Image (cartoon, rainbow, N blue to C red; front, side, top):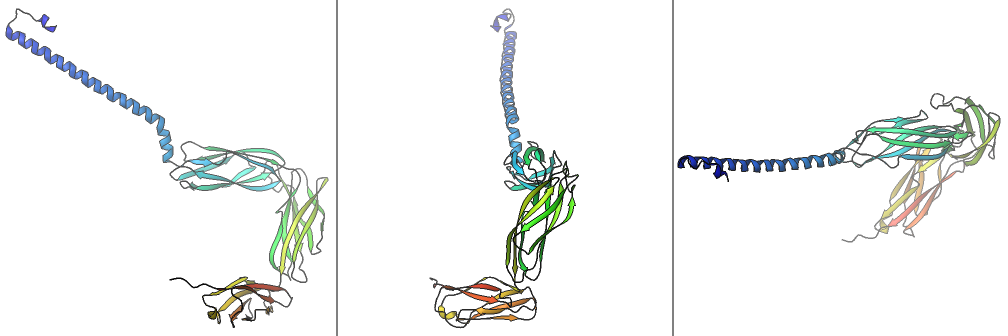
Length: 376
């Protein structure tokens, strides 16, 4: 005990002072020990908090920003014919904030980015448009998409195999509502692999109205865009005007030489030649709640005159419907219909038929309804 160190021969007062001092020292030591324990506990808690923050703060940071998502990081396009192809790659923002797209780079000039979104809203989707210049052989291109996503850029890889031989672009010749007294023309291109030239040897078609001619040939049409130039043979497909309105649905066979080898290509043709007018809409509805209220109702159908002096007349009309065409010498006319008598059949569907001087006819469907009474 501490007391044994006290001088027993000292005075009583001096001894009391010494014991009081010792007790004070003991209490102070205990107080410092408690405070040190508290500080140790606080330090431990702070250390745990720092460790948790170090682990979870990246995830929290990512959730606060936009997050770029790709449906796939590997796009397999398979075989592609020579020429240009536009590929759309879906992108999405999986974050809760607006995502900004800074840039998209390509590892090859044979595949260039023609459009990328500047911003994608939270939980929204967008598309990345890439134009490919395909040529014969296998090709792999890497794209890096840079954005404000804290995770960094995304890599997209695209693979394809360019098939050999020429191809026709576009692959279809089509035209709708062409006035029958005019000819129809459309240009197409035969795209062929590099290293040769091309020429049109001949063509075959079952329809005598169709004629094909070459107007240009450029063996280096895409030079500087693709690592190797791609040739282009320009063709014009002419469908001469028929004597009467009719569709021209046929197949054109092209015999094209690329270098020393001849290739046969097929181009479908779908062109519709029409007469002197077009009526729209082609369906009219007449409806009322009581049959007796039908009488006197009117409907109108606009007629576009492809020939200003076209003579359009009504050749067939239901007996309860008065139909006539009003023309004013312009490129527009009007089919006017009026219910002049009570029809014997309701509901029903009827036909009004128009015809011009070429005997070309046009039908307008008239649907008649009597609606059931509404309950109150």
